[in-house]
Length: 174
Image (cartoon, rainbow, N blue to C red; front, side):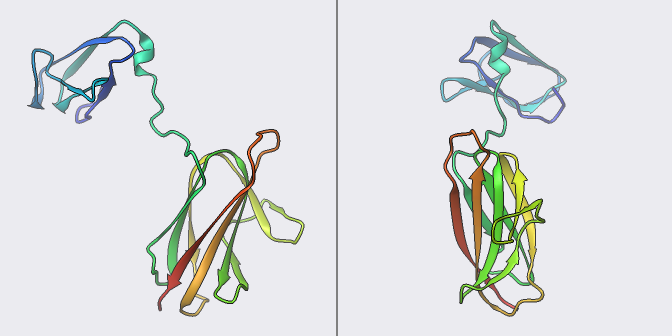
């Protein structure tokens, strides 16, 4: 492991012990220089020159660090904003994504993504993989006011998932 990391080792799949040599441990509990965490993991705190993990099953280390989200999520930061806002969204599965910006009267004033295709009414859509996505919305051409971001996702054909949509309010202050 690299120096300076604070590793989390899952012991539920067969890890029988953890030990370290050298370095400067900021916390050590018991002979293992580690503390059980929530009954199924070891938490090591400090900097180590060498770290050994005894295990009986190599699957003990297989763990997705960033799992795909379970549902469509949408966030705007900062909100309220001045000229630019970061619009982030999480996709639970790959799909065709359309992002539109509307003013308070319901008029479409912008699109969020560079389109890779046009839908039936001419608005842009993009094919995106599952996971987290962020883009910058530039509103320098818009007056102060309340706007709405709409994210629509049509899952990839054959996935069995249903289309979803999220709408969130954002406030532009100049």
